Image (cartoon, rainbow, N blue to C red; front, side):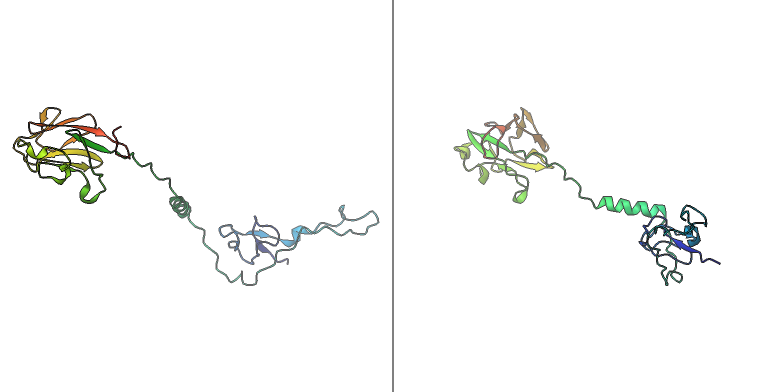
Length: 217
């Protein structure tokens, strides 16, 4: 009786080891072996493989015979990976692919024009959260001439600060109030270029946008 072996149906001749039992290919791990009878490769007698004188010609070899793995019969068959696991593996590979970085929002640079002096608002990432303090005794306003003589302005009058990338002005409980476009504010109010501010009754301020060199746009 001819010996029946099992071999990989997708591998090239000699590439994958054969087995005496049904299982899975050691090279193509999820490919199931198929039954193979070596007698099927022997051509029947009296075919064109013989010459007219009756002498058989050498039949071209179809390639080296797959070598039988002596340990394949005792090696447990590799279970097929469920389709859902294969899908999870592909998803994990896709998750590890480098993702394009989101475009960074443009940097907004603002300043106040106070009595002809440009006071840049410190960026949000600066120490203390950036911003700007307004008042007679505030160091941020030390460069403004004549500010100390404005008795309507409180010593610590108002503060400008960044919230989620937007600039807000907040009154610090001043006596004469803080105004945005002529309206007195009671809570932090968002401001931007072209807004006009007034602190107390005698200090009008304009909000302008500046470039990276600190010059008004």
